[in-house]
Amino acid sequence: MSEPRPSDRHDAPDPDDTFEEIVDEATQRDPDLAVIEAGSRTLRAHSGQPQGEAVPARPADPETDKALRAVEQELAGRWGETKLEPSVTRIAALMDVLGEPQRAYPSIHITGTNGKTSTARMIEALLNAFELRTGRYTSPHVQSITERISLDGSPIEPERFIETYEDIKPYVEMVDAQQPYRLSFFEVLTGMAYAAFADAPVDVAVVEVGMGGTWDATNVIDSTVAVVTPISLDHTDRLGTTPAEIAGEKSGVIKQGATVILAQQPVDAAQVMLKKAVEVDATVAREGMEFGVTSREIAVGGQLLTLRGLGGEYEEIFLPLYGAHQAHNAAVALSAVEAFFGIGAEQARSLDIDAIRKAFASVLSPGRLEVVRSSPTVVLDAAHNPAGAKAAADGISEAFSFSRLIGVVGTSGDKDVRGLLEAFEPIFAEIVITQNSTARAMDVDELAAIAVEVFGDERVQVEPRLDDALEAAITLAEEEDEYAGAGVLVTGSVITVGEARLLLGRG
Image 1 (cartoon, rainbow, N blue to C red):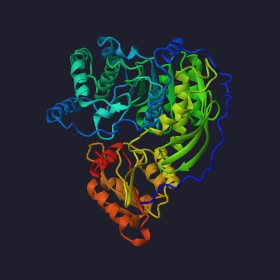
Image 2 (image 1 turned 180 degrees about the horizontal axis):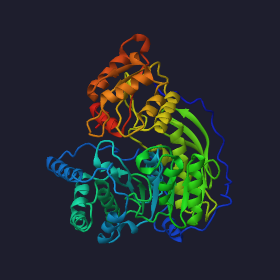
Image 3 (image 1 turned 60 degrees about the horizontal axis):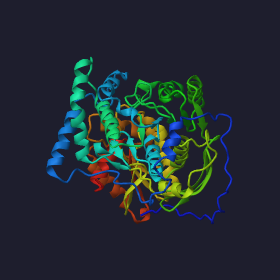
Image 4 (image 1 turned 120 degrees about the vertical axis):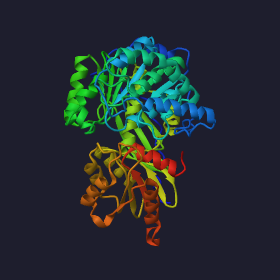
């Protein structure tokens, strides 16, 4: 196995006792947040063990598994996530008949193009470290639909998922009967998440948009903190063909008087976000100005960071994830949690450093440069657009010393496939083209034709079945002694990665 390169860092100096105050844009925050922070919960860190089962297997009990499959089948009969009618009318109607469960707790709303799920997991871990009960809603899932709704850092139990669906089903049917279109798959899941969070009950919800912002089904919450991860071109047929147009749609998550945590953005996208913030009197904290990554070093199993947050510097932060993009996600997550607690706007102090360290050390992000096998090393990454592919290529080049890397790529048909392949071309010695089992998968011959144009015929192999593609790539990685340090990267789609994870015994 090709191991991540160890850190050669020296011991860092003790943290400075003084803290910087955020400047220029500080405004008063919702006083209820101070109550949440200073109320019945103490600021006591958890043990720092990894978060709960990130990708659950099928239920062991046959009856539960049967019931879960029945729910999945009913949900699959609705509009899928790629068929949209841009409106929050239906989800708002569902929230109304459910008694507005999404208003029972404060929330942090996350939009952007790449990094949303990893950032959501980091925010969740940080909030858990300060003993807040969390609900996390993310999409899509890697293997199990229950991954999308998490409570206290772990996917909702199958029994509870089923129960939640059965509880809201009569109300879903009521709304279906009143609307021109039935609620979609994603809208029903969103309703389930908000209901489950209210029922738990949670102290705060961490919510990732499905697509866009303004008309996304999640956008019926009044979030006190809006997080915008890096924006790039994706879903251009629905969101726009420039970063500015896409930012215009995503800016819909910024609510009146909220705090916006803005990751580094293309200039035109940043301008759109800042303009929206001014319109709704929101405070903006910008990566590279009010917060950011001060330093990062490669370490065994991840990276060591110094992060500058809204309340000061946080040193010696170990993050068990690879890639500069994850370090930037960490800075965004930290600042979002500080903003939630009113730090920067109301208070000039830092969060407890030990709690922060333990929280970040516990973070898992399945399918994001995730090592799932050794001899040879097999890595999974759910990159599905050019920006994500570039981040993954940079991350794997930095963290691993492969003598040769074989790519296994299966994409969806509605993506910028050429751009994705071009991002990986410099690091793949050879590429195995395949497809996943869903109807959205790009035809393997079409994908192969583009791959030949990018890589050349001699570097491309085609294996329509994913299991055969994995076997072929592993064989290529093992075939000669001089390539003993070869590795395999499986990528192109969350679905491809999830199916590969199952085939490699990680389900």
